[in-house]
Image (cartoon, rainbow, N blue to C red; front, side):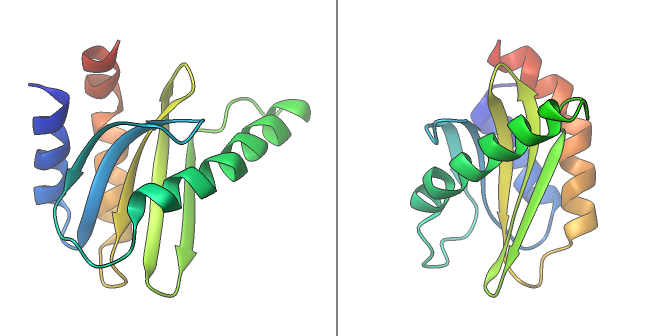
Length: 120
């Protein structure tokens, strides 16, 4: 299954997902699937947040906390949830306020290895 198809499949399994994407820590989107366009510019959001994710990774590493495996940023109009893949790459899902956060986290966790295999 191609990355684009896998992201599309992930979006179908989690009600309320607006966008799923694979990105790197520089904020560059490798592949993206739009499930629902809701007006928020997800690509600019990812560029802005990727710096904070990079800092969080460095902070966790600096205190011997291991590797950051997941992040979730909640805001008034939704949330951005991501899971670390490999080599500074993450998979992230932009959620509407009514989306099922737990189901999103489960899907990200289950799809991590298949995404790594397809990406690298």
